[in-house]
Image (cartoon, rainbow, N blue to C red; front, side):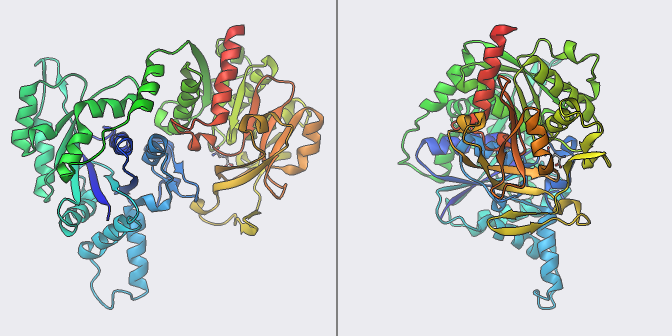
Length: 542
Ligand code: GLN
């Protein structure tokens, strides 16, 4: 049976629990262990699919079409472990299950309560499908003390008890703030946070202390003493320049050693961290840099485009190049200022998004990149708007647009009500709940064998993850191909355009899917590798 590592957070949110879990997973892998992940989110949404990116950052989509927490992206990117709906649950979904069971009469007339019914449902989820792996890293969202988190903390407390000895440990992530007026790092918030955790019955085995500077030895001892944690299990987690240095940094501070000690594992192989060292080397000493501009909507919050940002980093690392990202809010872009805004950039990317606001600015960015032969990458909405741009400016279809934004004269982008997946028809009902109308998860796409994109993938049949409601209208294919926009990739039944490109442009590709969701540090996505390489070529011209 697998060993469980429960990871909780305290003091403040956004300390990087997800990253810490992913990095620890990578460290355990480097010693030859297999890992799986669980993320338990205490909020009441059934999934993050309906939440604004401003609230919750990116919605990460898995192959099986689950809309999940962005931390799952960290787990996959760092460890290459394939995740599914089984890796993420919310309080909303737990309650949905419990209430459905109650309606079926499955509780035999009993009073349905948080303990044991909700906590049992959380435990069942955590314990499902854990046979064939060495470690389960299970992260609890939010911070200790949150009211909505209580059933989750109670469930993992019980698990710590139910499981055999040396079968579960608890890691608590905290922050040591530096107070400039006192010239000191403060341990009190950590002490309070651990006190809170212990008051609900959880004694952490390891403390991972985030800090922006070295923590003095006497402070580490103080934390150990007051928090009742072994001194060698108080680990400092210093800020690093790149998230890809986190595994090396945690290893240097002794995190994986502390974990093995806590489980009383004495014969673990030494870690092989050479591939992380190689990455860290490239990040520290790149051969040069490129400037890539992202013309998007949620630019104030980079978490909204987490996977995209990382995929671009992966593309940079495999080209030994530093990628500087420049974020522009598309609301601020228009025909008059677009030249000035984009003249210094080596490539333009229009990412996925929802809603009309800023769409005209994105269309101007597409037009700029097309006319000036600047590498252009359109993802999901970005591809849809590239199609609209071609329709308006090349095919002269005035009033071309997307039905997402009203009722355009030429519906280049529209709602398809049915399509085929694995030989079965999928129906989309316009009146269904918002959560139920998206095309989600992995779908196959077939490339024209002579297309540029087929060359980049080195294949003509690929599978990529989707998350969108609207589709490019196949009925305009001929008209657009006549003016140079090539429909290079289609769904296997030939009805849904999946990718577009211009033959007479150095690099102009649009994809209806989200390639960024499948890019990993040790498996960089070919489109991002190629796009960054095109930006490097462009940088030699600018
Ligand atoms: N809003 C568009 C759609 O629903 C694109 C979605 C996206 O970019 N993820 O089809």
